[in-house]
Length: 306
Length: 306
Image (cartoon, rainbow over all chains, first blue to last red):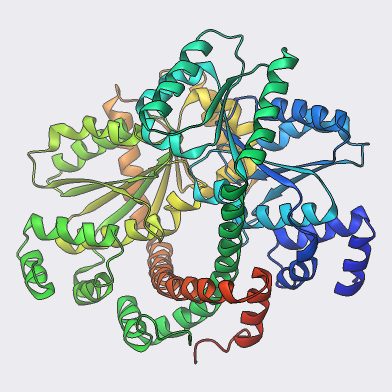
């Protein structure tokens, strides 16, 4: 086992193995991670952290692959973090898509990694933020966090990225009608992918109308993998967001770090609470009594000293 | 506002409004709920709590509607609790399906209710268990808890029901191939619905083979809404499970109540932790330092007294 000090030294020297090791620790919610990130904190804050989300089959991985190529053409370093919910119904699909990124496997300036919960306690989105911070501290310029299924708290990365790009497809047009309310809040930039298919113009227009009606300013772009200029335009829009929204991004980063602190505290306290629950549930005549007793013993505001 | 005492009295008299009110309180994680359930505890434990889950479009609601009819033909009382994850991609579908159950709206021995998170902290599956206990105490014989998307922790009801029925369709056959590992653990009873469609026999056979290979004993049944005897057979299998697996069900109930205690403690403690986090994050030079300080101040096992 490498010591924490050695690991940090190797990391600062730019050794990929140290980065990988630290990412695994974050993924596994290792209690040493906060101390390590605290020591790396001065190195963090240079990368652009971009969330790319949308329903399965929207072409997120292909689009990300094209973004990676464009970013590499600018001689910038890019990391792709795929957040994989473990689900027997959707699981696996995301990992399979990693194949599309394989052409970059020999490029040390492209870093690709999947994260999954593996049944561990604690939020996967929080781990995604910590991993992004590690990759940021390591010197990558872009971090693209890919996830399916916005709206599930487990994989909801909106709170932990600087900008959220929602990728939709023309076929999904009917979905919009029924889901108006939720969809607008999700993204900063809307991309209608596979725009060479029927219905693309209509969905772009509908999204624009909906945003207008809701008083929200957000770019809506059509893209498809066969049109390089459209893909470039999408990436330019993302870069533009970082230039334009510096204050918003500063606030989001602050907020996401508060979420990280909350999540760690929650995790540590939960272990304690579970111990208390299982010890006391055994000795009481019914489990609801245990909760009532806890409510009396630790009333709101009395558990942790100020 | 009705007092807790009045509410309990009305509930015990069998007033539906009191039941509805208590369910809303459980849904909203009202801190009075544990005390109420504690007082009702002697009335709880008679109902059969059945989880019905499966991918969208598997015909769960139609099948549940047929079960409701069969249960009513036996003069038993039945409640259907639909657990709705709030998701901009899948949301709404489940609620729409409630229409199929509308024919029972005038039957006071059929109780239908949807639960959703509404952005509140705390597990929806835990609320589903509490609601099931309330409905049980009220005197219903069957509680059917319906949910989509097994595998998402938010709506994972496996841990809080007595028996889990997984509903699949022939079209989903290809899905099984890739998802072998997860699917077997999910259910106690497998139902291949819409069995009049092509591929039904094959998926039944595949499931049986998979279960055999995994050394798991579980019924695999073909059903479709046009064949009453097949639907009856499915419900009989569920009833049979309750007769056969009394010890397993006892353990599951015990375990689900421990989960309820843990969830309540977690919720109460989380509020405290969030306050601590936000107060301390402001005064430290970096957020990771706050976590390290908490780790030092409240080492494992020292937070809550034994």
